[in-house]
Length: 334
Image 1 (cartoon, rainbow, N blue to C red):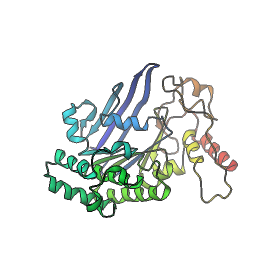
Image 2: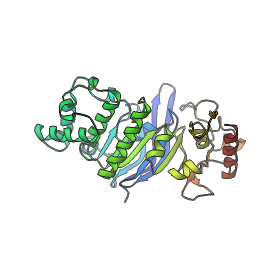
Image 3: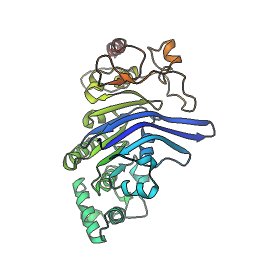
């Protein structure tokens, strides 16, 4: 049995413009020590999929399907039962630590409360454990700085505090929602290296939510590419990076700056993401895809094993060969 198994996960929001289908039929499984990267542009459904799993959707949101943790459906749990797992066995690093941390409480108070609630530790033992985790995430003088307030830390240090808080109870699953956003590249590299070290030490399974394919390349085993709330392509990191078989994945890869191509021109994906309240009838990417045909516009493609690799799933009417030719053509124009 997988540690996490998600089956046909859907997320809908009731809005003034009608029903918004933010996530549509996501499936994946995750074993101990594995890392899954979920990538895509803003609004593709990345964050909403994991917020649904954690029971943290907005009040107008509704989740369907299953999100099984050790065989127990998180979506069907009562709040009291979910609270015993959330922040304990399954923890989350949120995108913006400044809004996720309480500005009125010291870091010590926020960390010790987690251990007192989930582990029943007294204040002294909880403080010692908190200092130990701050040391583990490379915060200098952890014993002295634990008494500070969030605003007294830099952006990179606040993110480290968030990681330490998520790891306090040694979770089996760690969900990281854009953990390197708004950090400079040096700090980003440090955070990725830190997550890799912590995974090695604790054996934690990680779900990494990001729009940065460089982050995925440095950390993830499996990759799921989302667009318009649907999976476009899903497979191993090697398959996605070196043998991309969906036009959207090719477009994302073409927009990554390369250090080995002097004078390179980046290839942007034309157009804008779809209105999630009025998704296209067919493939959600059809309005921006240079390979789109009438079939793509009218018929939603099924997520099926790719011709070149049965372990890779892709949702595209066009052949892998046609997409490969597109990738080569775009590379020649770069």
